[in-house]
Image (tube, rainbow, N blue to C red; front, side):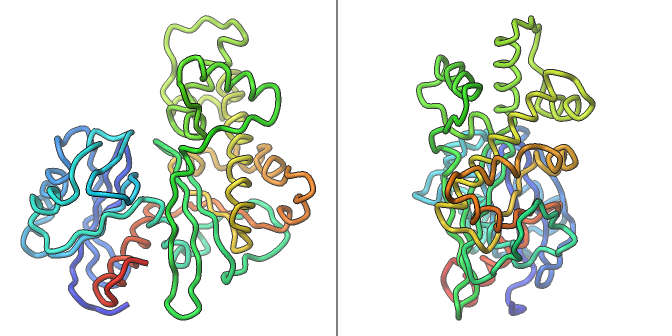
Length: 330
């Protein structure tokens, strides 16, 4: 990485929180701040508020923003965010920055993989070491469900392929999951993987379990309450987490077999690091490997949970530097 055009604005923006930082030199950050998205009418207002609060207005000219949106046109398609439908070009104009990269959040997370310290990668099985020349699968449940693929170019470094795998149709693999699908299909025309593998998904699984078991509930706990109580032995919450981990095993292995992810499978997002011990002991790995005749290959694939607090910063920094110095987005 060169030392051109620092300082730079780097951000990882989810459906709930926007995380901002100033990159003062390659992969060195300061003044990191987390802002609640719903407190700002627009993304541009949040950017300006952050730059003002850290006294960087006029001192930063380039930014990379990782957001939960497809990279298709000028519209921020952030269905879980109060900024859904806003214009990227208008956002750039209102911030006054010379350039802004709008990256899918898992585009950035994928690009972060080569830069994450091994201390922030917790291995969940797999008999082989990851082969960095092979494709890497990235998946993560949080406010929504993100996916991406990372490929190492033999000359030009890394290239990330973001995806909207969270929108893919949910694949039930046993009778219990057929019943879960049926429960949700009464409410939603399309039952996607994200309907289950997300914060709201935890609540839907919880609600379904209560209906199946004829448990009367006055209100559905928040996702953070479900994860907390589930780890403490609350019967419904624990069952919710068990189902959640199994479904993640299926969706992660679907992604892995589609790209032959012998470079490793990497799990990000905000949920799994918060239930790490529970997750390690869950049926995730056995479900991940449950692909019939392809099982011998899946047993080889290592899976890692990303525990770095702000991993997407690293990928956004890499993308911005390549863009500024080589003229393309990796």
